[in-house]
Each structure stands twice: as structure tokens, then as C-alpha cells.
Image 1 (cartoon, each protein chain N blue to C red):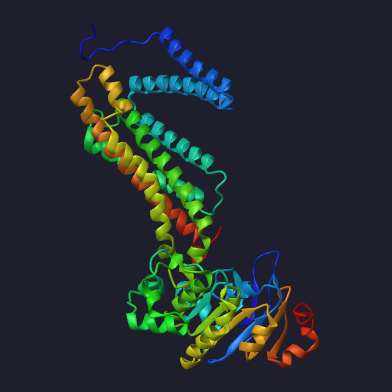
Image 2: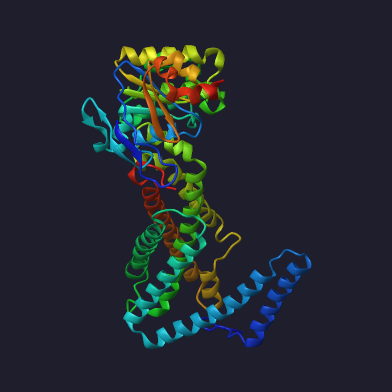
Length: 261
Length: 228
């Protein structure tokens, strides 16, 4: 029996068994000719390499406990997130895209992360890698995913409703007034997914952090407390990043109060 | 308008030069694809352009575009209505300026455009194309523009009452000492409604003058051929 504060260390055989299940799913997609084989295979390999590398990196940072190194790691995560969003939005060509993505992530995710570390968790040392890196990764990735969805939708809104946007501008609307209905639709679309998770969390879905803490031997109530905090932080990071990015992108697309697409 | 021309490469329009007097209906005439719509879009700064656009001596391009567009209204060829009722559509421009449109004003504007008071509460999206166009014209008039520019309005209006509606709209503008710029590819529309016309072809100014005299000049021959 495993006591509180202890956890079962997984063997490489265990990892292999889980990989076999993934491989079985991959073979099933091939049998059904779903053309997912390549993506699924690459995804499995990437997940293995990336997570293992992250594990070693976080372990190294935890052993060193150098605040600057930990903060640098957060900056690298942020930079990678920016590149990932720009990559996902490759086909959405519009002026000011990079600025919107950078502003959304920096102004949307970083303040939330700062509040989480300085105001909520308050670890000692303050920038302890054990808290900064996992919480940072969750906050940044939440902002990244929501922002991608919001900007994707916003671009589609402007393309498909160009006539409506121009009609508003022609009636004397400023760029902000003409963009507002489309910013609202885009941010709502992004946030509904996040809010749906808030509605169902704990009922069906026990999120990764809470699961990890429980399996790691933390008291379930304490794990729940952490998860509540994380859910609120993720919601706020998603919301701030989405709104900031959408407003920045809309301002660029409608610069000079005309549709620049 | 002086030295009005596009800044883009390819499909260039201009340089153009013309004047419109208050109370006048000025037609811009040319075949499809000649750049007529671009001229209107340049004036209200939906297209990047250079030149000079003045209203009673005031340089309109020094104004912020949304202020300019409250003075110079453009109704595009494709009528676009917003979700909500016809009244909400008509009062949109006023609300942007923090002012309300009274119901009596909305009824008057609708009647100018040949629609009855019953339309006020109808959902705009459910109207026919012709009715939408009339709502768009009423919506533009609600801003009390000094210049009203209509892009091929007869294309969307029902032929049976289109002429009557346009005459009522032009009379409404004339009463307020406003000017109308009417873009059309149909010589008949220019003859029916216009007082003077600018003829353009491939983005270039071909001729300018009184209607119908200008239509009998050699420069306008191509229009007659297209018309026949």
C-alpha cells in the first residue's frame, strides 16, 4: 500500500504498455483508412521526446534553483507559444498578426502568472521551478490555445462579413465600433470552450494537475484547492489573452478605418 | 474632387477632377469594371488614394474617416442590413454619435424610400433585396449627409418603383441643399436622373458635362454602343 506523500514510480515497461495502447489506436485508424496514421505516429513520438526533455529540464532547474534560469525558461515557453500560434495561423494572412499574438500572450498570460506565483502560491524561494514552470506552462498554453481560436474566428468574421463591417464604417462607425460585434463573437466562441470546462470539471473530468497531485500522494482536498486556483487562473489568462489579441488584430485590420484584408 | 487617383498598383483609377453643386444629381457613368465604385470608395477613404476632396472649401481628407463618412454617405451596390429591426438599422448611425432617432423621423425617412411605417418593427434580415436597399438608403439619410452617393441603386431596386423612390430621395436631398452622386452603367439612369455626368472608362476620365449633351460627344460613343 502507498502512503500519503508517497507515489508509485512508473517503470519503463509501464510506459511501453501505454505506448502499445497508443500504437493499437494508430493501427485501428490505419485499418479504418482515416488517414491519421502519420499525424498520430508523429504526435506520439513528439509527445515522448518533448515530455521527457521537459522532465529532465524541470528536474535540472529544480536542483539548481536559480531564479534567473527559471524565469528564462518561462520566457522560452512564451517564445515557443508565440511561434506555435503564428504557425497555426499561417493561412490567416492579416496585417498586425504578430503584434496581436505577442501582445495577447505577454499581456494576457504573464500578469496572471505573476499573480499566481506572488499572490496565490507564494512559494519560497518565490521563483521556485517546482511551481513556476508547471503553473507557467498551464497559464501560457491556456492563453495560447484560446488566442489561436479567437484570432482564427476573428479573421473568418472579417472575411465573411466584410460587407457588414464596411456598412458600419460607412455609417460613421470608428474602427472600434465597427469591430465590436465581431470581437464579441470571436471572444465568446473561444471562451465558451473554457467556460464549458468550468461547468463540467469535477463531475466527469478531473484535470491533469489534480490527478497528478492525488496520484503523487497529496490530500485530495488540497489537490482540489490547487485545481480551483488553476481553473480560475486559466480562465483569466484565456480571457485576457483572447480579448487583448482580438482587439489588437481588429485595430490592425481596420487601421485607417478601412478593411485591410 | 481634384487629382483623385488610387495609390494601388494594378487597376488604377484616376486622375479625376469634378465638382458637384448643392442640390445637384451628378452621375458617374461608365461600363462595368471601369472603376466607378472605386471612385466612391476613394472619396470616403475605403480605398487608399491621393488627391483633394473638398466640401465648401473644407479639406475632407483632413478629417478622421468616420467624421467624413457622417457628412458624405455611400450606399453600396449590395444592400447589407444588420441583425435587428428596420428601426434599429435606421437609427444605427445616430446611436454611434450618441443621439437617438425619433420614431417620427424614422417614419419620414421610410416614407421617402417608399416604405410604410409597418416596416419599422420588421426584422431587417427578412426583407427582400429591394426593400433592404431602401432601408440602406433611409439609414444613410438618417445621418443627415451633405452628399449622398449611391452605387448602382437601380440594380437592387424593383424596376416598377425604383425610379419613383430615387426621385423622392433626390427631392429630399435637394430640399436640404444636399448633393447626390449617382454611379451607374446605364445611360438611361443618367438621362432620367442626372443633371451633369462624368464619363469614365478603364479608370480614366473621358468627359464631363451636361446631360444629355455630353452623351452626344464622340468620347461617349462607346457608351451608346454598349447601350445599343
